Amino acid sequence: MGEKAKIQKTPIPSRDEIDKQWYIIDARGKVLGRLASEVAKILRGKGKPKFTPHLDVGDFVIVINAKDVRLTGRKLDQKEFRWYSGYSSGLRSLKYSNLMQRNPVRAVEHAVKGMLPKNRLGRKIFRKLKVYAGAEHPHQAQKPKPLEI
Image (cartoon, rainbow, N blue to C red; front, side):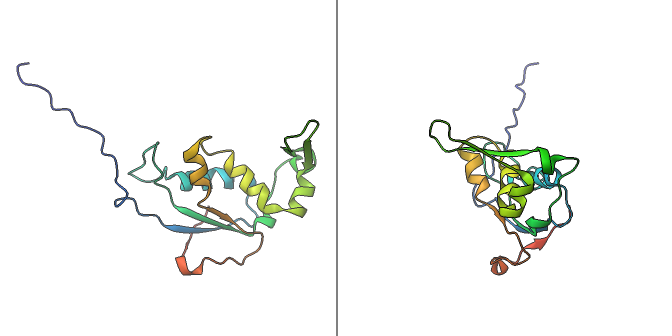
């Protein structure tokens, strides 16, 4: 009991130690919520050994074919996408069946954003998500690795 116990501190990765990869995910036939939770994990970096909750250690994610994502059950007809304009009586809503026809990218982004932290870090992490309705994307130069979910 005479000698002091050596305290081991948790290592915090520096900016140089964090390497960010680019991944591409094909959303064709995938269920929206399950896709969004996997994408949120990758964006956050939860699968990495150097994961730190208060740092952005995650990777970039490109989601293609967002127009072909599925919703289970009767969500397509019953679930509503809601937003508020800021004015009195400015609450607007749209059925997911209409949203998927108009802007499927927004549906995927909304699902992923809801699974990220609601603070500055969450907003920073969300900027690493790139969603496209079709199969084309302008990120060939980053050499994204295909990821199967």
